Amino acid sequence: MKRWLVGRVRAGVDGLEHIVGGLATSVPALAALVMLVAVVAASLVGVGLLFVPGALRAVRAVADRERTRLTRWGPAVIGPPPLPESAWQALRDETVRRELGWIVVHGTVGFMLGVIGISLPVYAVEDVTFPLWFRALDPSLGGPGLIWWRIHGLGEALGVLLAGVVFAVLTVVLVPGIARLQALPGRWLLPPGGDVDLSLRVAELTATRAAALDAHAVELRRIERSLHDGTQNRLVALNVLIGAARRALDRNPDAAADILDRAQDATELALAELRAVVRGILPPVLDDRGLAGALDGLAGTCAVPCRIDVDVPGRCAISVEATAYFVVAEALTNVVKHSQAGSAEVVVRRAGDRLSVRITDDGRGGADEGGGSGLAGMRRRVEAYDGRFVLTSPAGGPTTMEVELPCGS
Image (cartoon, rainbow, N blue to C red; front, side, top):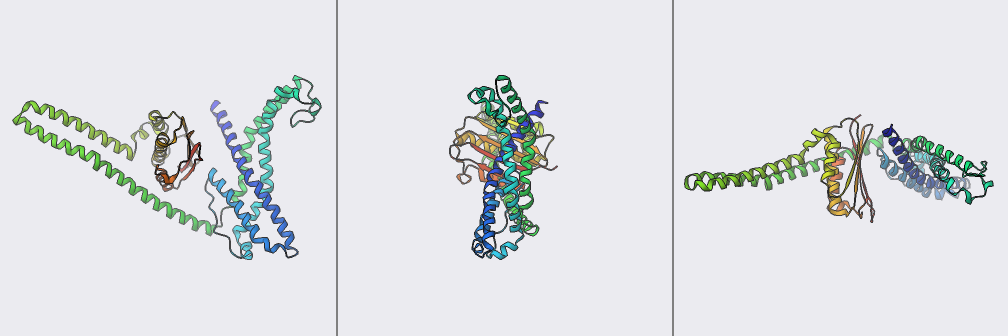
């Protein structure tokens, strides 16, 4: 029951965050809708035709913001090709017509859903805290949001508190559904038409395939370099020591024991480096303890205090788990080296056929994929599995890395 309750509260908080983002796009959508109505009205007298291209560009800009938002919170919504140069061709374009339909729906229904979704937690907080400040109000004004409820003492104020509890329950129960309903028109109308979508998808898969081959080549070079510079040198030294020990047995038997001790040390070092190379290919801890146990091990060896929260029923494909493991390992290494953070958190969830990984730290931020910190390699590794990689790191922090990987149903 506790786990279910925590899950529902977390879903409510996530839904509220989605609603805030949806409200941030529904307001400009409403403004674009008003502008479109004005352009249509002006076009009836011939003046508005001059403003049609600008209005369509404004609609495309708002729609692109919604595509970015939806991509951040779920499966990617691929953007369409550029607008046709001619206004008449643009109006005949299927994608433009779908965007116009989305503007109408999201600027009205989406805006109302956003207001409702925001109002529920606001009323909840306002009513729950009402007994603390009700004496500062005129009793004839009623409770917050309940103007018909006359407040004459603490008893009525506690009644408002109970109403706040009801609003809180409604927030937890209804907000996730409101968020999904608010996003539904965008998921339905904003992807490009079938042929365009397919061609863009083919181009995207071609790019990710090339990135996968590059990542594979880089990984092979890393393994080769590790074997050549580390293990091979140890084995050469071991061979030299064994040869010296054999010669010492005939000339100076007392020195042979010391040489064999050095050979044993070289053997142990070579085995340790070989095990490190093997762990770099596929960590055995994933097979032994699963993803949760492997990430706990990473957190235990991290120099920055790290909290691990993994809720993944069952097992994913080993390649997916290995990708998630290496992403977290590289991210925590960056946190220790570059972020000056006091704490970090890793949250892993599975929703349907998607495995999501979020790594957050409270450091100085400003992470840059071009800064040589391995972020570009992490993106290539994730995109090679047709995954999604989003990095948010404003100056001053915090830094949040969100990764989604397909893991089957």
